[in-house]
Length: 258
Image 1 (cartoon, rainbow, N blue to C red):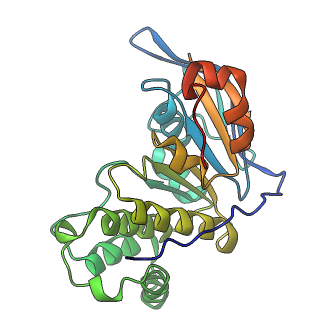
Image 2 (cartoon, rainbow, N blue to C red):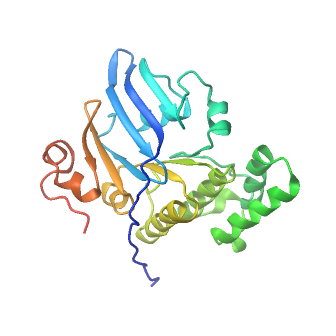
């Protein structure tokens, strides 16, 4: 049986904000999803977003990337108002990386060809492309998988590949949508370690949205709980678990992360 490594979340210390969601309200067909929401994401922070289905977790990702425009309010990245900027400008100018819940790769291409495809889009100089790809191959231990088509990779291997593809652009902000869904325990532990290493070695701000509350809380330094379009609890994992409103509206009384 493989050994599950234990790890500790490193204390996040930066107070510099990289993303601000200011007084944002969002409606879908007259149904309000977010209600005057305010959220700050700090540099080199690992932020987890939790809440019931349909509460607006994915909407926050869409607001940051530009897939959705707010009905009211502003989106600020690195001090610049990007509310009206298109998706491509946000990803290139502000170094965003997105790992979607589904897809994100071409199944009929090999692992190495998926990496090369994204690298050719983002990196013009051939030598720099090869250097970046080789770094990711070593970082994610892909050596034995390079010539296997993505369709034949396991769920965990596919998730690692999509994360690696998102890192080719050297993002400052990495958005992970449901990264732990339908994965086994060992693979989840592996992904948690990858996320923590991105914070400590790559100095990336990571935002995670997932329904697997326990797995998410075990690898973030800050979490928010959404309910009825608002943030009802915010703080460290221990703080949000202990929050009265979070217990009543999301966790219940018996939930713990031990």
